Image 1: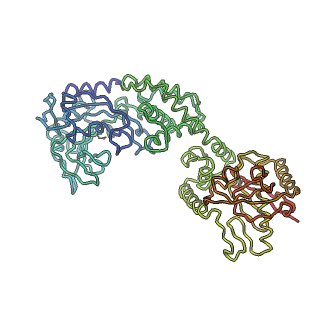
Image 2 (image 1 turned 45 degrees about the horizontal axis):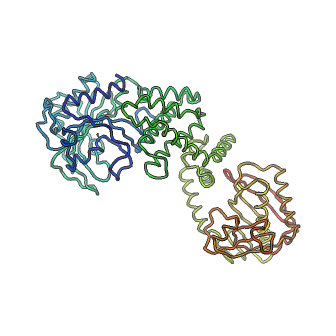
Image 3 (image 1 turned 90 degrees about the vertical axis):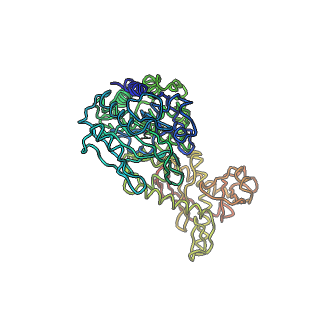
Length: 600
Ligand code: SER
């Protein structure tokens, strides 16, 4: 049986039992307390509570559907044989007052445990022809709040003749379902396993869970069943995993064809196939990548796909192909897939945004990969600071990762960074026995202070000279000055050449020889920003700031160097003396470090 036949056979079966067939609802739920549609019952919540009347809307108190569903709870499991983010769920439902609850009652009134269990068993064994030897079931064992589901047990054992050893007791975690969202219908379940795989969850909504968790018994109990479509298919088609069934077959073969590097990387192929299909369905229902809620879920899926494209060299023209395959396979059931052009636009648009954000960072990771460097949490934090590469993406792209300490170190760095930012450009004269301690400048005596101040002005010149030679991408990432040397960290992606270093040094010395004035003006932060003065990227500046500028008495805009800075500085560049670069090296990912000294 292929997927189209299975869907049809399920719906036909329940139609023959008096059920109205209801189309799948959107993946965007009505219920604002849930992010995405996670189960077939969600669109029917109001029929269980009596707020809506199934008889007037569907001409039956019984419905059945094949429902698009999406769960983020198992996202880390995707890649194994059974877990998916997006999946379909086959389900039958009953609302309102229970009628005869006899399996041969093919009318339209509500039913409960007897009919549900008999029909489920009939469908599995008679329609799908699965033998009893491959089946076992579970029943809720009871706890303090909710009693043992004896009724279901008896139906299985006494009416269906299920042997006792095939009826397994399950606890609250395994055999009690719901609610979705912050409140709603819920109750004990009985579940059917085939070949050890859970395929059908039959829920008896005898309770309503209030916000806060309190359960109350409902007047009209309902039925909510859900059968994992892809899992059932894998059982029927005797496939090892859901990815080998016909719902995934073409997509998976195409991925393998496009990316020979994925040979023997079955789990990556599976994640790729799952996320691609999931993204397409989310977009088709109107979700757009963003930084919050469902949009963020979508963004995470797509960005993982894009990271994999780079990492595994998957042909980048693959999205149109994939959309075509998914559309062909599902459009008859889910006509929203006719939006294939929009779907492609959304994917490509996100690709552009992603590439802008991370291309530099990805290159940096690639460079570190080539060097065989271990990517630590601290490096990942730096990549995040510098290139907006999330730690997840770093983990995807990095070849060599210190997995054990990764998250801990990332968090530590992040905390440290917050503290540094808070300290900001605060000046602390006299702290720790130092004559001068601004955080950036440290001197223990008057004499040392003079030297440090000269180095400080030299650092401003160095910053501008680096921009002159290497371009506007150069941005200060750190500065630390003591009487021996200035240490300056800045954003740049590779080692500087000897030639570049020489040029930078020459420019600084030229500015020193020109005997340029060094001045500052205090002004509102907004005005300072308009001057184009360099700002420390994480500085928390007060409403009024000082801008130090070099090369002009009065004209900030025309000055050679200008920076937000608390000072202090020399009055004239001639006081600096001779400037020399001592060393250039990597400080961390994407950040270079120069040490420089002065003499004379
Ligand atoms: N709501 C239950 C589930 O999602 C049965 O449909 O498993």
